[in-house]
Length: 82
Image (cartoon, rainbow, N blue to C red; front, side):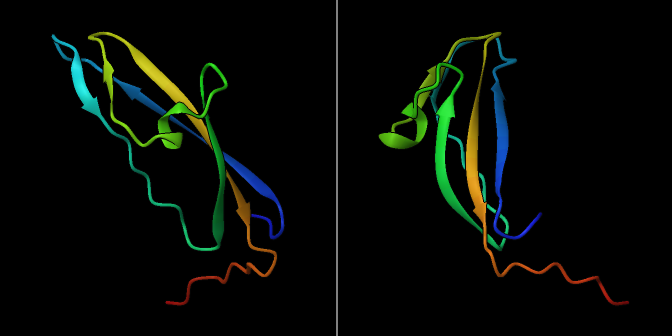
């Protein structure tokens, strides 16, 4: 991560089951040193985060969305010490 920049994470949810997955919710913990900016789904809409309602996902289908974060300008990655 480069201090002061933006990063984009892409998350994909897939339903491999035999039936529609109901009330699907996605949670992802952001790493230290970043702040949430926005999210959009494949259609370019911020539906998953904006209203926080779970969605249904039909069998064999998937959906992806992007989460954009800002890296803290003061972020400094320190090397691990043994």
